[in-house]
Amino acid sequence: MKNQRRWTSWSVLLAVALIGFGGGAGLPPSGEVFGSVTLDGEPLVAVDVVFKPAEVRAATGLTTTGGEYTLEYVTDVPGCKTGENTVSFDWATGAANAKLLQTKYTSNSEFSENVAAGSNTFDFALESSEKTKGKTTVVPD
Image (cartoon, rainbow, N blue to C red; front, side):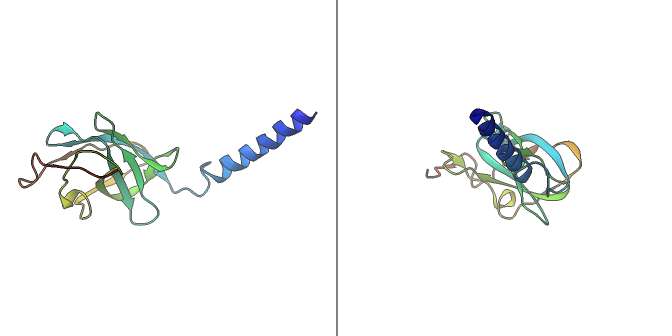
């Protein structure tokens, strides 16, 4: 009987947590977003891909060793707000030997994408400027 009460208590607590934190309540309309990022034709590894709508929070995804990313709106909630989003790229904290990115890809991004409900694939082919081609910078841990 005591174990049954304990399991019931944990079940109720888990249900409340799921409903309150990521169960879908209060989230904007969204679409799933996947894709890849390259720099000078090579996969760009360990870069944060950021989709920022005019309103509400941004969605982010970290590129893999193959340069692929999947956006998350919040932890374990995939997707991005539907509509127009500004897209930017930034190195993950602690990324080693990060290549220099042009500001048109970071703070002054020239990219925007229209995210639709359902599945969206956006691939980005970035290029180094002539000044930064072949150079790297080490980002501290």
